Image (cartoon, rainbow, N blue to C red; front, side, top):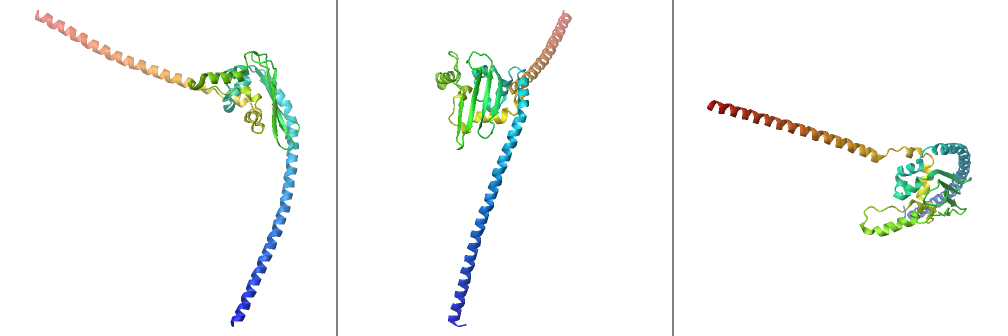
Length: 277
């Protein structure tokens, strides 16, 4: 093969390769456009599914309401149901100081209400008996999600009785204690009603709505771990006392044996003295 023929063949090969690349790029571009069209269909179905799911949630929210009402009526018959439920919940109990618990003993009912369209937010209502801390009969906090997706919250202003503002007392107690205090009281539970700093990540609100409200009974019935531990300690103490008594009895028996031996020795000594006489 001549040099010129070889060059021609090489040119033909290069031109064929370039043509293959052009075809491949064109096919890839068409595939990407088709993928985008298919993805749009998937997104459309997802939106349709969300609308259908929302309708189902709205339907069952209405169906659940009579049962929530019946449950609230039954809970009202159990003293201290809600404060016990909150104290037994690991996350909520971490937010409760001693005086918060005292105030929550007057809590008679808790209600969680999702707004009718569900996606725009919900409200939590706390109903209280007459109490020495504040005038309000109901304390509420609402969470809203506007059309642009920005979260916000608002709540009832607590009308504290003179000298009973637990939110101020909590901070004052911590300041006075300073570094000397080993176990600081948590910030008052009631500061939650005035905290609107991050409505989109309000942990307490989400816990009450999604964890406690669906089934509060499971937390009310949680066994008191302190009592169980106390019972175990009592049992250990009883065992130790029994062991101590056994040791004392054994020592007592040994002492008796030694006394008997001494008595025997004494009698033998008297007999010997008598014989000598």
